[in-house]
Length: 432
Image 1 (cartoon, one colour):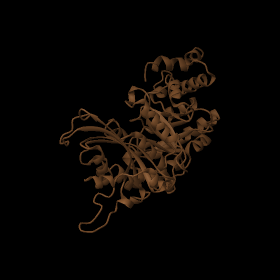
Image 2 (cartoon, rainbow, N blue to C red):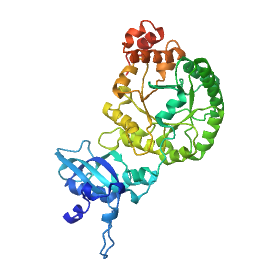
Image 3 (cartoon, one colour):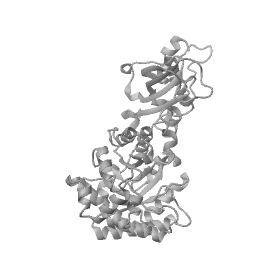
């Protein structure tokens, strides 16, 4: 590109109609001129060739993505060796782009094709690039329904206010037939879980069919609710082929499931948006496949972007990699994802953030402190179902830990009078 061509992909924010553009934050490493690389990034994801040969025209003013902000610093070499990378001085660059959303409309597959597609990851001179964040104007958000229930709706269904919502992943997660699976789910709900959930890998399996499992767990939730005086929910995993999502929704809900789990990225965000239009119960996202986009700090898509998109597609809660070494996610990134669930997003309701990974009563206080409030879900697996006293004791230990936190009493001190909590601290205190 010559200097005039490059300048055509730059703009001042005040010169653009903010309702016509989404904003994208990228970090990339390039060889050569960082301004030219940023211009190529804009071109490749929008207009590419902006005029016909021999015709005096320029489609950039209406259709081009434009650089609003750029910051570049030279570095000795790329963060990782890249085969075939262009020669030249290497720069680490941060840019904010304005991309006209009229190019793709309020369609998630087309949005992703533009901002995460060939035009981004095959830009000349940019072998390493990561989409860090995405922001939408009200005009774009108006076309989306977002969560049907959101945090407030979940709390109302569970009559759970002023505290975290306690999930539990029924373990063993694979192999149990419906009857023992339902029994340990019942025990945990009777002990204090709000939601007993299928593991993300347990689908409509021949040894544990969804119809039978939902019927038994639905009955278990009703029984536990009658005994405790608290509403309970069985969260059924309906992850499957797209054409089975609505039939499995209908089957699971009719048989007793009070919410549905969907692995968002394997199924696809557009499929989730379709399901949201049909669903009568809360939809809960799980994070398989997210790490393959998000794990490397210099390449791919920041998990905050995928969290925002899951909320936009209609999930009422988003289970995400949580704190501690088990999930190999930087604490700052976990907090970014939590904020992406909670912060204002036009008319789109907040989604409940559920950071998870090797949690138990021993980690509840730490997670609460990092989140900085009660609007989160807490989702142990072994911390409840691997408790030495069994699932009921594991669930009780969570409630006992929360009672201590809410009262401002050290959890370890409260454990002296509560054997379930003491056993959890002894069994799980060294994890996370």
